[in-house]
Image (cartoon, rainbow, N blue to C red; front, side):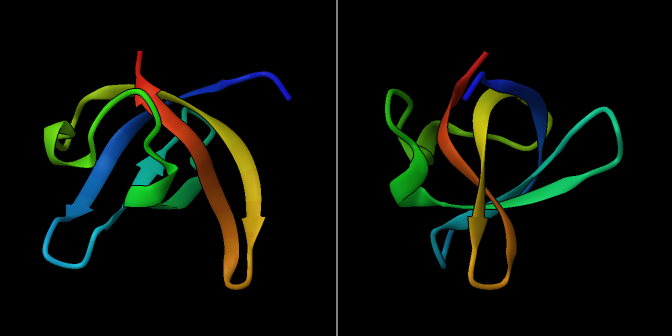
Length: 68
């Protein structure tokens, strides 16, 4: 699957997850374990990222998250 562009909307560092917003208004949950090349601790709200769309038990999920 081709990577999708997005922006870090929110980081919940104490719990190890965050949310990515895309240009079409969609929002994707991601867990720190989905950050491959970029450490989760280095991500900040507003940063541009690329990721792959996935599906988790509670809805859309970002996978293979990395800085754009």
